[in-house]
Image (cartoon, rainbow, N blue to C red; front, side, top):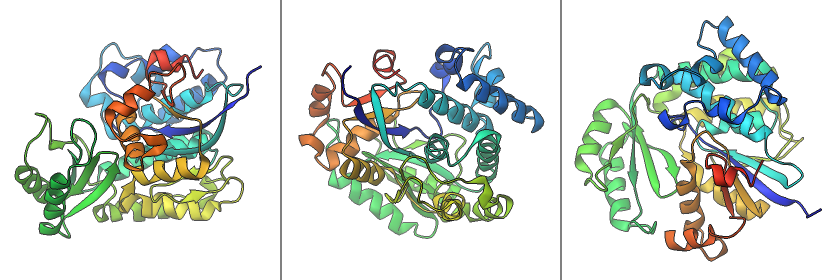
Length: 345
């Protein structure tokens, strides 16, 4: 039998369950799979909370923006789909050495590492989605790289200028590979979007239904979450975790109380440095592969751009990365892509 490959697992954030992902769970999870029981427990809790069940949402006849993009529904779908994918990784092929995620993907990472467990995990995910969605402000995304994923200093300078002009009202929300996600008051976001030069006919792009995540405007949501949930909702991680600061939480050593304070406090109100998390993960754990959980396959570009930034294994451009991905067993494996999924399960 061939030797196991080491793998870093990366979990996607909010916005990864869209129209093409409708039915993602029913396509990839059979009723015979052990995770199906967990899904049934999630559905039971959602019914108790008088929220649509994950099964109902995933098996809807058609995709509805009003229903599927609603914060607590989207978060529940993404969390459940991520955990379902994680449960299907073939452990005879892959030795998982660490887990990280982008933004809400940190919650999925906590679930994968056993920090959040059972029904409690879905209670936390649904509550955090509701609390942060009720908060103020907005979010938009803007690229800092060219078409070959090389950094463009001019774009960085223009973005820095907007952050300076609107200091106290506009913040770096997520460092997301070759993209910056900014968050702030409705007014500051609107003004910054008007001031930045349009590019690719898409950017700057407002993230619909998003409040000012990972910014000080989230402080009321963080305060409520910290007071509502006890440290007993958190357990010691069974896998190493890399958070949105690039800090490693070691398996079986990290304190549940400290994880609570970071997850419900600082992680909610401060910049999420996803690119740094990827850089730390590959440097510290040197995985032979990176496995991207679903739903969707939107993480690929940001992960690749994060690797290019640190010149990982000689990668310096989009072309380099595309060439590397043509290997029989690519370095980055996305479970949202059918041809790569079959290499993982």
